[in-house]
Length: 138
Image (cartoon, rainbow, N blue to C red):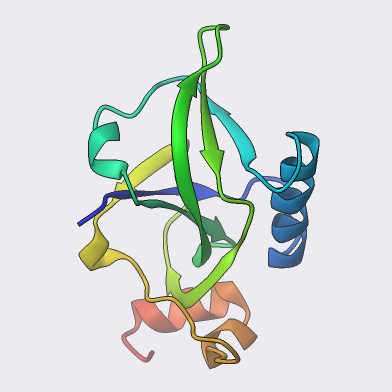
């Protein structure tokens, strides 16, 4: 079972702008190959992350994932996380904001949405979804 990580979609105004950033990053990095993120530290459990994904948090809700291709040292004391330049929609799942990234076990990861499938919870404002989930209503 691959290990994944979560990260805030910082500076994204919407899931659409996040998707556009991923696609634009791939074009800037030589075509449809990968989107690039940098981090200060290499994950200690990087071997377990083969086949894992970066799950994006937007407004306190996990909204999608991008498969992780690999990690590389960039020579400036930082590490590059190379991502497949897609945002795969998942069933919305509330998630508290945090700094940096956190590990996400496969059993705790939200399921992908199928082609044409819509999660009605994504139509709800994320903060409302978070509050209703805390109350056990969704």
